[in-house]
Image (tube, rainbow, N blue to C red; front, side):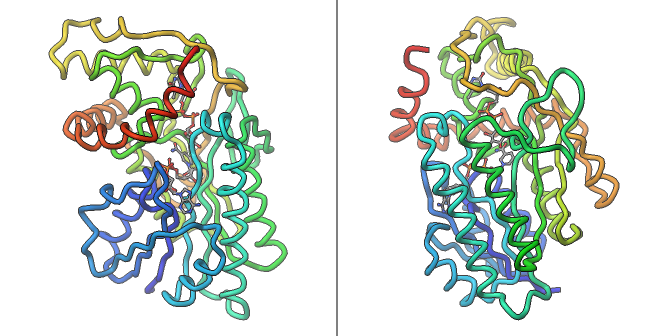
Length: 351
Ligand code: NAD
Ligand code: DAU
């Protein structure tokens, strides 16, 4: 069936992979990408599909109710995939209110515009909210997050995402809005803004800069290749059940320090350095306040019900990612100039 899909945040890291997948795999759909182009949004992420007839870009803010209502009506939007967010935990500690504005009020604005535009006919409509495993809080050394794990967020970022998840479920229960949600673990891959662990480390190793590891580097994350996440999002969009939540993860847990050392070893080879050279750049720095110890996802629901599973070869995906950053020096240089320098100073000075 034909779908007219509004993707919010489609110029960001995950959003650009989702837009590319849907535009290429579904020429019969109309894909409208609405993005404010904050520091994290970059239209050059989508150069390869920008001229396709089934793709439209609109620069705009999800908090602008007049614009959102008009986009839903003008483009006869049937499906919304909502990725737009402030997404970096450290920035949420420096400036929490921006996260409440975009992640809570922005999501509420979209939900409200959707029920008003679709009122009287919710058939064949869907609001798909993209969320994070951070809403569940922190695990000890055992156990996994699943769809039934109670919420227990610790950072302004995760608390704002938890609020948005609750709002989505409230609009479903109260107004009958058809919704699906997914909560995903840490993504990595091409086009990720280099404030996040993996691209930051690649950029610093390449440039012989210190590698800032928070605390003792013992925190654990479950890493998923972004192209696998995009396929999972497509599976939930097409086959997810109304009102349901799906947990998405890579079944791929790494202590931060082990992952950083692996990146050092991969880059030693690619940059033709003597083994062990890049590891000498590791610098332990003051821990992140409220730092969650461990995230790990039980993804059996999406695997069993929707037939999705991640690429099993993490090392292959990591090397492919490293190769992309090495080949796209101009992209890295462009996004790390300007505003990023000020953020980097505020975040890492005196740690
Ligand atoms: P990102 O920061 O790379 O991109 C966010 C995009 O949203 C940018 O293009 C930005 O310009 C846009 N945006 C921000 N505020 C906006 C506003 N007010 N109006 C319109 N557009 C706005 O983020 P990402 O890492 O791609 O994450 C995308 C979504 O996935 C987020 O909702 C995030 O919470 C969720 N998520 C991310 C991860 C991860 O590991 N990166 C994991 C799980 C879930
Ligand atoms: O789990 C999903 C979440 O993953 C998403 O919801 C977020 O949008 C995304 O940013 C990510 O959050 P994290 O805080 O886990 O990712 P980040 O890359 O910032 O950090 C990963 C781990 O590495 C974390 O334990 C903190 C640590 N770290 C991070 C940076 C930037 C360091 O040790 N040094 C660093 O410089």
